[in-house]
Image 1: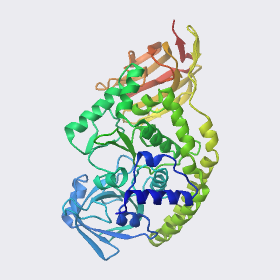
Image 2 (image 1 turned 30 degrees about the horizontal axis):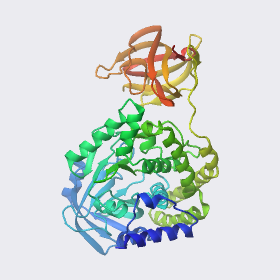
Image 3 (image 1 turned 90 degrees about the horizontal axis):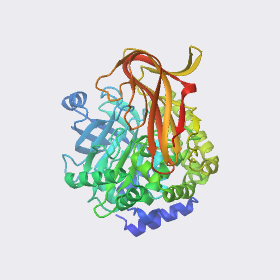
Image 4 (image 1 turned 30 degrees about the vertical axis):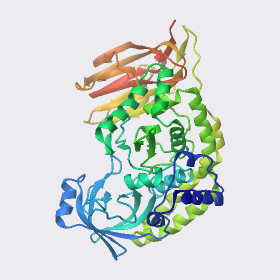
Length: 535
């Protein structure tokens, strides 16, 4: 084990050699290293791993895929790891059945205390079904590591399940005590798994630490966010949340275009409460980054913590400063170009051995990824200069037309269209099959303090509500607020309104034109959509 000071010196030397400069990150997040683990992830080879599963284990992974089954792991046909525990992993987009191309979570020590795989007690084998380059997780780790922020390390392996050649997989370090000791200097705190689309006010899964104490810490953080008085909310947040770390975390997520992370989608994150410190977030699931070169850095966030933090004008300014400070970690070609070339040389031969056609496709996808990275980095100064959106200044009694709504389907059977009906331009929501109709048109705006009314005209046809759904039928409402008017059945053009109060400056308000039904159709008159500031 390298002493902590030696590892920090090594990180600094690497940054200087590559033209990057970590000004402050080490002040927050001490990095330590395990010699075996560090060497494994620095290896330019693609190791071969074979999971040996007997018939009982195979059937268990078919019947109970989230339950650990015993296996033997063999590395490069020579090193054996007995009594390894393995289960299937993945959420809605990446999960595959055992007989398909599944992802795996492995624990080396669960049945064999003290056993590790290159210093790791827990790690994952990701199937990369949502990343045709196999590089996104690796890029995310490289960026966060270069900036001095803790993130799981990433490598690549060639995998067999018994004699079934599965091809190239992404190996990622797991979140456990060893990871925390390596990255933040201790593992005595409380670690929560963000889960699928769950925010900090949900019942998050506890991964590490005492349950009662952990739940209390999580609840207190949610209570801080719920305070209606801004001064009280900011004070309580600053007492419980490491604000500088969160600004750094959010800036890195946005810079790399992590649209499926916490700050943009309330997904793919871990939340850690140190025993005597303030909470901070850890990045996760970065397999879909850099998808849109012009992805905004100041887009409205649905995440509770991000919303609360960004309502503080000083913290907003500090966030923009973090973007400026951290952008060079993504934009330096002398840092990234050699690494892209090295990874291509590392992965393509392995893919060619497995499937030459797949290798050619992957090579092309890597070219496209690099092109998107170049376009994003070349325009980074412009993206940062956009700054936060300005609040709309509307005088009492003034009416503002609401244009540019965007579609938000929630099921494949829901069709959202801009259309014409009876000579009117409308937003349409309808079902296309036998499944439920769950979809909406949305519009986000920033307002100053005051009272407002939003208006629309709606017409429905054969809308059958979902009785168990609180937002059932067609409705106009604000996100996270109840709908006071709901329209079902056959309804001719009817005016619907929603009045609300904004209690602080630059408060984001997301307006929703929604249809939630077993089946049916709703239309919203586009010319009727307007916002009025009340006296």
